[in-house]
Image (cartoon, rainbow over all chains, first blue to last red; front, side, top):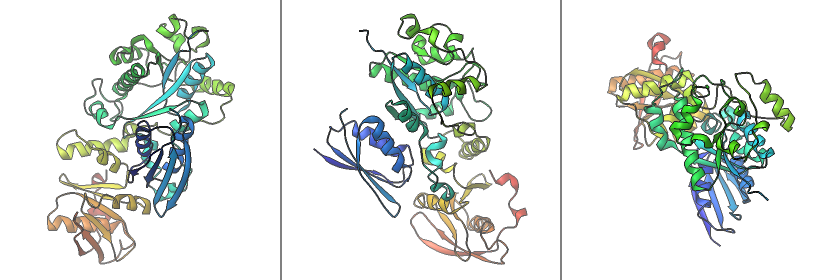
Length: 76
Length: 347
């Protein structure tokens, strides 16, 4: 199992979703990916993308204007 | 048991594409959605910028629609490839800088590539004959099929019975009799079908979902091209056209003046790319300077920005000018009068 972080700061939705989607496509089930975002829209869009594509959100937190969204990759 | 056929749907998140998907699902077709991000999509960037909008619920309509429909959605970044569609549309522009027919051809072509790469059988869209003046006419719909290369693997479930039979119908993958014959601009048939499917909510983007259909945005894009002497753009250019007041006192420089705090914050993200002005003596906006200015022009720019501050009636307003390296200096100016900012400067 691996854990990675991608920098989605300054990207506006849906670009953070696209970055997550493209990175997840290269990962294995059980791997974890943290997206660091500044667009608060990512707080709804990345979980929605995870729900429809079978991945799990395991943590979401915000510090000032930074949003940290961590998901666990599902079967794909 | 017969093989379950697979369709990829161009899913904008609007009602028509949702209905097209559900009509296919009712016939047992496996559907996945595809959504192309051009950079000009309205919902993508706007809700994150303005402070007044930050507390509104955030929702990407295509993702929301996919979730309602229980399908996967693939969002594809086509920003770079799409430039050629915007800059050189073979079929021309619509009322503004919207290359709707070329756009549809391009998206169907990209969906066709995706379809072949993922072993899907056909493409569906929510198009309705006669609904849009450029891309959804009976005479332009075959153009989309032919020029995209998809030919008869493109099915429009809402209008199929007004159109020639497609491969999925001929092969019996779908039942033509259970497809629809919608046409024209009336939304009543779609709303009735939505009700019959139990849909209670759908996105209705005011003015469409593309900034290129917006007259004011198109003016700003045309101005950008005119000032640069060529029809080129980068992603940051088209994002900045969505934000702030754009004021062009001369061909070689333009000001982008924040209209409120959220825009100011967004524009501050560009302070390494553009020199900036910020009113310091009064409440006032943050502004970017696009272009190289003489000292006189810089004072003129400062006076214009001061005009949009709370010190607009003061004899003198102080601003901080910063270059892209962060070197700052103070400017004191008398705010411009309304007459000193002609209407034609405000894009």
